[in-house]
Amino acid sequence: MSDLMQSSERAARFQVQADGMLFDYAKTSMTETAREALLQLAADRGVAERRDGMFAGAPINETEGRSVLHAALRAGPDAVIEVDGQDVMPGVRDVLARMRAFADDVRSGRHKGAGGPITDVVNIGIGGSHLGPEMGTLALRPYHDGPRCHFVSNVDGADIADCLDGLDPKTTLFIVASKTFTTIETMTNAETAKAWVQLGGGDLNAQFAAVSTALDKTEAFGIAPERVFGFADWVGGRYSMWGPIGLSLMLAIGPEEFDAFLAGGEAMDTHFRTAPLERNMPVMLALTGLWHSHVCGYPTRAVLPYDQRFSRLPAYLQQLEMESNGKGVTMQGDPVEGGSGPIVWGEPGTNGQHAFYQLIHQGTQVVPCEFMVAARGFEPGMDNHHRLLIANCLAQSEALMRGRDIETAREMMRKAGFEGTELERQAAHRVFPGNRPSTTLVYDRLTPYRLGQIIALYEHRVFVEGVILGINSFDQWGVELGKELAKQMEPLVSGEAAPDEKDGSTRNLLAFLKAIRG
Ligand SMILES: O=P(O)(O)OC[C@H]1O[C@H](O)[C@H](O)[C@@H](O)[C@@H]1O
Image (cartoon, rainbow, N blue to C red; front, side):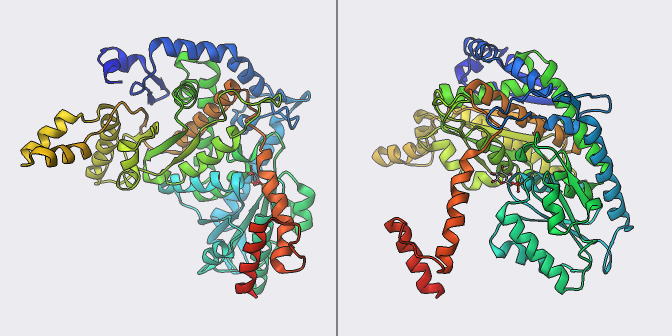
């Protein structure tokens, strides 16, 4: 990598700029020849055609026979997008208008709970009905001017108990967010919330809203139709924060800022649809990812936002990337060539530097790092913090690339007064192999518009990687088996049924638990 960087043109040739953002992939081992081959692969695998099919409403989610149209949720006022010959946009605009009206009512205090204006909103959902709004709400903290927003997802009672502690059952609004409205975690938490509101003298009718594709089920749960916000099955759960699933975010930041978030997403859609592949940010982010995972063979990648408000971005991207591309078979059901998409993990910088960066710098596995940093923060008078943040981000990618050789380490130890074998031993610990790849995404500030751009960037990146690997990025059959077995397991935990059919380990675990639980 250092050799490649000797070329004075490297940095300019290995970057993509789009609408005020810069994606640098110069600190990788990708050569011009490799990039040409990767671009050829993208063309051969039909990335552009598949992309156009997605935006046109073709049923590219073939295993479920569905279109993939989350982009319709952020499409501008003139868009016409057809599914089975029907324009879906009037429906999209209608539900968005209803969300806006509801958000305005709640935020202005016109829509009240039993105890007066809504002070707190609790989004009850999991997976795609949780991670997006939670990540986005944390990311846009400087824009919050609505009720406080909280998120409950885990079936562990600790989650909802800790959330409700200190909230008022007469002024808390619950949004039950579930595409299917059958997810056991969400339904269990929603029932608990219902009982809590009832016990506390709240107004069940006014203090519950629902977001779902299953309108019969929201009605059966007892949520008034005027507070049900529906969406279609062509919006995948992990791609859904742009529509009704984003209601909690809209309540926190207001409809206008939410519009800016949508506009950012749409701007990235336009870029993705129109920029030539070599200057297309999602395409180059995807090709860099595939270079690392499928050519270099690095099994994981770290997402390292130097932006504290992106603290939940790694978790969000874990679902987006691993639930989309963590599959062993192609669309046709054949084994995936070269393996599924990579393991994604990460933490905001600088925190990670004081924890797991040791392995990234000196461990024997190579972890491609995806750095992100804003040029400016939101904290007036704290630019000293922000300068340090940027400096650390840039220093890490430089250190990963340059490393430190044994001669330099020896020299350091000599200066520190070491000699002989002790000098050699101390020097060995101070060697950094270097030649470790990273990319860096730079943006001005984490505004709603930028958030929209960045999330759409990653969505399209996952799409491109999926197309090239031949994977259907829009189903998730791999989550089913565990759910089925959990259903069978519950009566064994409660003691209603005997675990005779289970394996020895599971029987042993159940017996140990039973001995404690009684
Ligand atoms: O929105 P829901 O239907 O409640 O689904 C919530 C989540 O659970 C499922 O098991 C899937 O793994 C996720 O893709 C989904 O986002």
